[in-house]
Image (cartoon, rainbow over all chains, first blue to last red; front, side, top):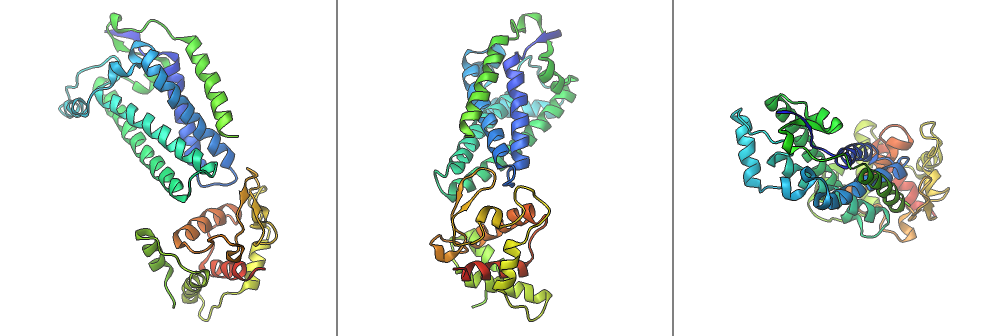
Length: 201
Length: 134
């Protein structure tokens, strides 16, 4: 095995935009002074998640849902193999990570939608309660995801955080994706800026 | 009837239990009385608190920054510009009837405007003021 490109630019850029957006939205959630920043940050998370749905169908091979979304059974089996310290190595997402991605994308969209509807004063206080519940749940899944990244990094002796920055992981040469997809990354940036601006008006 | 705030919050978390602003002020007042015996809510002190400018937030220096000089008027969010329903219960809105909601907004807004949480005495005074406001 050698270092190969597995995460294209839209995947990495989208990932870190969601990280920044979620962190900022969480930090400003209780503040009226930062209300516009909160709405813009949350809208960014929602816009990136929506783009990721499309990219999960038409994106690079490792970005496609069909490539990494497995049932909960396989996720549990993978976690068990981690505990037994002999986990199979995946060049792309492992089944547990795949489950985390689906959950995080779903929560990002649901939390974003409930927050946006609350901000627009469509829907009542119950929606605000739901928004708070969903973001709390999302923070929980983020925590589990981080724990998984730590355990996975140790188990495979591979820095998975660095991999999400450089896009490179250990794998067989034929598992590599073809390119960075610069144009799609630019589209992601333009879409996110436009969608977040429109949503936060 | 005097109902402790903690009991109200418990009830509010398990069921929708509407209270009157008077009951809520009484509950805060009895909590405040444990610290300073003989405490009575004062609309005058509440009015002072409402109008006082704190050097904490430049955009939101006082309650009145968003809620205007009178709690019977419709307010305006100092940052988003969105309309805020009047705080005064007599202005029609279901104000100060949901203990959990009242606690949530005292916690959030006091922290932001005063730079600290409000005391039970301040909350009792505040509710006395907005309830009497005309």
